[in-house]
Amino acid sequence: MALVFLPALARMAVCGGTHGNELSGVYVVQEMERQWKEKGECAWPIPVTTVLSNPRAVKECRRYIEKDMNRCFNRATLSSPITDSSPYEVRRAHELNNLLGPKGSTDAIDLICDLHNTTANMGLTLIHYTTSDWVTLHICKYLQMTCVSVAIEVGPQPHGVVRADIYTIMKEAVDLTIDWIHKFSSGMVFEGGDVEAFRFIKSVDYPRDPETRTLTAAIHPQLQDRDFCLLKRGDPLFLSFSGETVKYEEEEPLHPFFINEAAYYEKEIAFHLGKKMMLTIPSVQVQKD
Amino acid sequence: MALVFLPALARMAVCGGTHGNELSGVYVVQEMERQWKEKGECAWPIPVTTVLSNPRAVKECRRYIEKDMNRCFNRATLSSPITDSSPYEVRRAHELNNLLGPKGSTDAIDLICDLHNTTANMGLTLIHYTTSDWVTLHICKYLQMTCVSVAIEVGPQPHGVVRADIYTIMKEAVDLTIDWIHKFSSGMVFEGGDVEAFRFIKSVDYPRDPETRTLTAAIHPQLQDRDFCLLKRGDPLFLSFSGETVKYEEEEPLHPFFINEAAYYEKEIAFHLGKKMMLTIPSVQVQKD
Image (cartoon, rainbow over all chains, first blue to last red; front, side, top):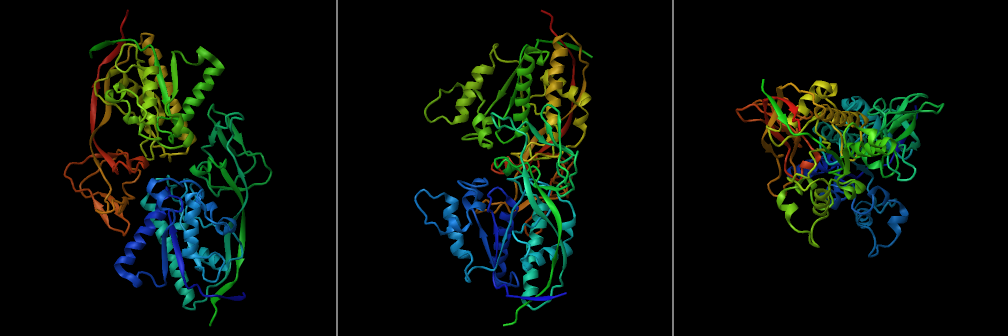
């Protein structure tokens, strides 16, 4: 299998509290800052910047104050000037872009690890926006191999709550990511191979009253908590509040995920549907200077 | 065993959305209003008033807008005049007191069934503020006998989420409560006996940083989800974010509940401790006119 040489990763950032009520990341960042105070540069084998992304939302334990921060890091928003009417999160996104970016420039940090929780039963999930970033896919492969917890179905976490089991899995994943980057920077060859992933196909909304837009059904008990399990024609999707079952009617079997995520009610998403795929990634090694 | 004659219960109310992000009650009330539209007076065997307690908080999917509504129904708040600076929930509490009260008067509704959710793994729990209200204790006994779900440990529900399993248990409990009142009003004798309950003893807070007041530990994985299980000296309580275990040090074994309730972080409550007790209740029958 081909060996691909990739640029070194000099700096990484770990961001928690991008959504202020997703508490595991908030406490992972807090613990890393405590470790930094205690041990200084010996805390990690590589330089790590820790960031509490949305401190006001964390303080109020809300997802966001004025605008979902995850929608503030596009180039249009980052290149528009700040005005008096700019939402808090847009201002904060500009600050973070100064700290960690500018996005797309050679000064930008090499890897951002943005920590989130979901009320869905998705275990430890890594979200990628491309299928050709070998570094993040290798980190994914490394976590799947090393982190025993990845294979275990862990409980979902309510927003506004920190569960020790979920915290521990997240902390372990961050530590392993740092570990991978350190080994990679030290010249280790990471063997290529297959990585299982799910490609987003579309979203499905809840059944709603056509006038009031209020929900008329909840996720069916047979679908609840079964993220990434195959959904086939005839399988139950929703149970209406008066007791009727709504079934999956499409021919193509797909894999649902983000099932019953609290923050997606307002986005009119009951769950996403994805297609399982196998990505083949090459072996990688750091470029020599 | 003694037979106690009690006044009839002419009217009851079912209230959902007292906390706007606890969704099961919101949808139980919505479904009951749909049934009322469909069937009118035939919907239930007794007159039932349905109420969405805090519509603004429901709309924003928040626990409350300005003040926790559960703290607004004391006599001091209800008897103070409304001013321009009165919080929204205090105004709404006055409205509800006009609709369902006045509290303590002979015009007041006979039974209010106020529906809540918790992120703790408490199954179906009935909260009483006295050990001598035979009607509510008899309803409790009736639910324990009839409702198979009561004995099953059902999953906790994140705020801002409706789970069909939790919705179904709540709806079943409301239907059985209506059923009990109907049978009682019709003259049925309900046999007395023993009812298991837990008396509140005290609350325990999370370990916190003495300066910032931020949490330094989460509920220990061995305590998480074990509401109502006996806690003995030496059992783990908390796991700090750096990995140390905090143990239960008291001599007296007690029963924890409301373990890791999202809304109690701001109230500085990690869990409550209670003592198991057996209440003996007399047989009851409705008074004849």
